[in-house]
Each structure stands twice: as structure tokens, then as C-alpha cells.
Length: 384
Ligand SMILES: Cc1cc2nc3c(=O)[nH]c(=O)nc-3n(C[C@H](O)[C@H](O)[C@H](O)COP(=O)(O)O)c2cc1C
Image (cartoon, rainbow, N blue to C red; front, side, top):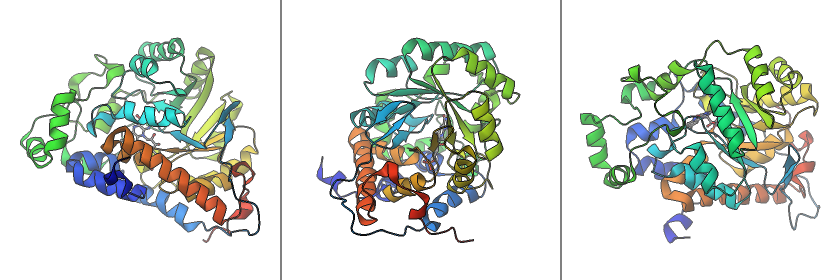
């Protein structure tokens, strides 16, 4: 690892690196949330509001963070969130994240809106791969994506259900960010101020939505990324549609983006294999509850019927410990990994190792030898 990376010791340090190295429009696209960013901030605050009551005098010489998910043993409790548009940060970012994850046995979720093609990713990655589906208005095309994922051997299908429309991300509206990048006076100025980023973008090939090339209608010019994606999604997609996907997809089915316990129960009853509790990192419905706050209720109601993936707001290893205490089987990271990708695969590796080291340290200092044994009693009751 180079000396520069060694000096970055937290996810927050990588966020600062991203802020320095990326044009404002790109940084805000990754970092920002919808409207007033109430939910974005609530996600972070929810983790910090829950306090650990450490235990003492247990043997924590070698904390065990391994777990198992859908019958597969995992060396760590981490998963990588699906993220579209990653190559805006740095060409090859999708592969950089996937490779760093694969080296640690961490499942990587490729987005429908990824800037790496699903075929390319399947060929290049030797780690566990999941495919995330946005159900597009053209159902035949959506079903062709499912068939491609099955043929390529993706181990799980993650159907995202919280993007019935693109969230109102006001920073993106003001910055006018789009894919393909439009060469406006502002993009050119931003590029001139960040020559390393601009050089990489020009030499690496401008980012494209590889899986939906030729499909997304191009009347989207002038729309933000969220609006353009949202415009192409099927807002009429409902429980019947999900059941149809359940019939089509023979592998593990994970439903991403529910927050209500009744929906979690319904997802379990319709035959999904896992649920992914998420408010999209505060990028969709502003004012939505923090996902950690929803976790407790959902885990209680589900009572172990399905494994739970939790995301939104994970920035510290101790957050993973808290998510586990409240019932998450595994924890997924989005922005943290993408901030790392600003420094390529080595940057993502560093971020993942920081999170895992912090998790191990938090386990040692709170007297927890095995992550899978961590219980809710590790946390002080929620302050109202
Ligand atoms: C740049 C970016 C792009 C995203 N694209 C997608 C996507 O294509 N599909 C999806 O289901 N979620 C997408 N998400 C949401 C993430 O999967 C995840 O729910 C969220 O980032 C978790 O919050 P965190 O960033 O605080 O970890 C995206 C998030 C970011 C930051």
C-alpha cells in the first residue's frame, strides 16, 4: 500500500479525498441525498444514537466476524451495494470495487445501471456476484436482464423496489449532472479544475450504462441521472410483478428497499429468500425513517424467517456491530466503497480493511468474541 493511502485512516478521510479529487457535480452526485437530506443525515445519526454497553473479561484474542448468508459461508459480514454510474468517479470503478470485494470474499452486487457490463463483470470477477434489477417499463427487456444474469451465473437477484420514480436530488438538479457527460461550460471548467479526473475520463472512455445500452430512451437529455433512470422504470410494478419474477428466477431472490414490517412479512410470504432493508442511502424519499431504526421492528416481526441485509449510513466498523445487534445478518456498504474507488482498487481495499479492522476492534473492546452471537442486549435502549 502506498504511503498516501496509509495516511487515510477512516471512511471520512476517503470522503474528503473524493471531495478534493472529484468535480463538485460528481462528488455531490455520490455524496448527496434527496431534498433536504433529512433521511441521509438520519441514517448517520441513527447509528450514532445507539450506544454500546461493553462487556468485560471475555476471550477476544481472535474475534470471529464470519457469518453465513443463504447457505453460503462468508468470511466477513459485508456486502457491496449496487451502484450505478460508478465510472463517473473513475473509469473502471465497478471493477475496482468488485476486485477488492472478491479478494475478501465479499459479495458484490452489480447494478442494472452499472457502468460495467454484466457479461464483462462475470468474466472478470472471481468473487461472489449478485445482480440488481430495476424493473424497467419494457417488461420484456427486464426479463431479458434476468435471463442474462441467470445464464452468467449470478448467485442472487436483488430486485430494487424503492425507485418508482427518481428522487429529487437538488444538488444534481443544480449541477445538471448526466450520463453521458454533457460538455457544457461548467463541465469543462470542473474538468479544468480537476485535470487528473478529466484526463482519466477522456482516456478511459466516458461512462455509459452498459447493461441498458440502446434501451434507455434518449429523450432524457437535460434530466438528472435519477430522473432519467426513474423515467424508464415501471412505476406500475407491484406484488404480482414481483411474484412473476419469483417464478422466473430460480436462484436466490432478495428484495431491496423495504422499510415497513408489513412489507417485510409480505416479502417473506411471497417466497423471497432474503430482504434488503434500505432507504437507498437517503437518495429517494426524503423524510423516510433511518434504516437502522426500521431494522429493530422488522427483525422482531420476522423472527428469523428470512436473513436481512441492511444498508444506508454505514461509515464505521462499529456500525456493522450495531446492525448485527439489531438483527442484520449482513451489512451492505455503498458510498464508503465508492469513495475508496477514487483511489482505484487499492483505495477500495483500504476502505474495506478499515471497516473490518474497526469492526474487530469494536468487538474486542466490547467483549464480543463472535459476531454471530451478538445480541440486542449489547446496545443501550434507544433514546427517544
Ligand atoms: C452513486 C450511487 C448509485 C446508486 N445506484 C443504485 C442502483 O443502481 N441500484 C440500487 O438498488 N441502489 C443504488 N444506490 C443505493 C445503494 O445501493 C445503497 O442503498 C445506498 O448507497 C446505501 O447507503 P450508503 O451509501 O450510505 O452506504 C446507489 C447509491 C449511490 C451512492
